[in-house]
Length: 209
Ligand SMILES: C[S@@+](CC[C@H](N)C(=O)[O-])C[C@H]1O[C@@H](n2cnc3c(N)ncnc32)[C@H](O)[C@@H]1O
Image 1 (tube, protein in one colour):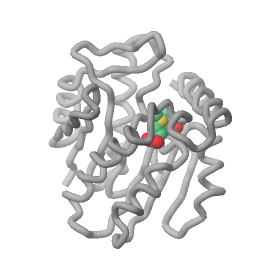
Image 2 (spheres, rainbow, N blue to C red):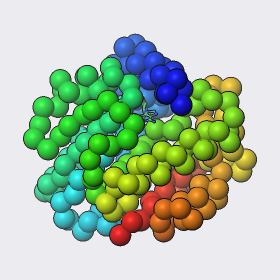
Image 3 (cartoon, rainbow, N blue to C red):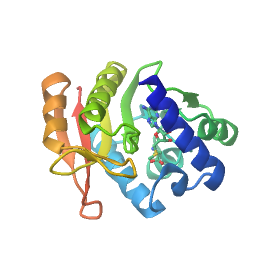
Image 4 (cartoon, rainbow, N blue to C red):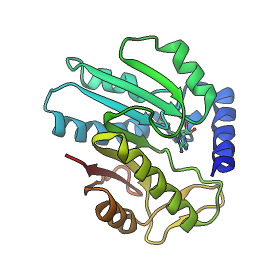
């Protein structure tokens, strides 16, 4: 899938050059909706951590919007943030923008060190591949790899539909039961989180603890 990832990286690099560090660059409709996804992720962290410090790998971090969100949501909690993305333009931007202790940004799709949690928000939304089955296998392969460097679990969101499909605009929809069954059979206990405001999306938490 290296050539597929090159196509994805080119798409997001071009959008970053055109729009800059705003939700449109990440193919998001609005900051409101981007933040609703972050809230679902942060709620899981909150529940699991109860005020304790943590480390997090944000895979498909884009221009790093989750980092200031987490700093605001957890102002009194020490955390280590590691951002990864296959698109170099947003990563280069983040490296200039955030030179902070306990924060790193790297080009890549699999973390090179362990974190308590791995999170992926929208990472697998854009699919240049037109077969929903091939794309589902790609998601499962990535989850399996990322699982190895996740100490407490993985939190990720995808768009869902009764039948998995890729739209003409290359946006992917997964079948939530297939995803849950894969995660439970191969990785760990999996919970699903839904929001009325994001009716076509599901946030999954695969629990390793
Ligand atoms: C929809 S954007 C979301 C960005 C960010 N998570 C946010 O919510 O603002 C998806 C990002 O994932 C990146 N991406 C796509 N596939 C990836 C993969 N396999 N590994 C790492 N990054 C990936 C893209 O380059 C893009 O920056």
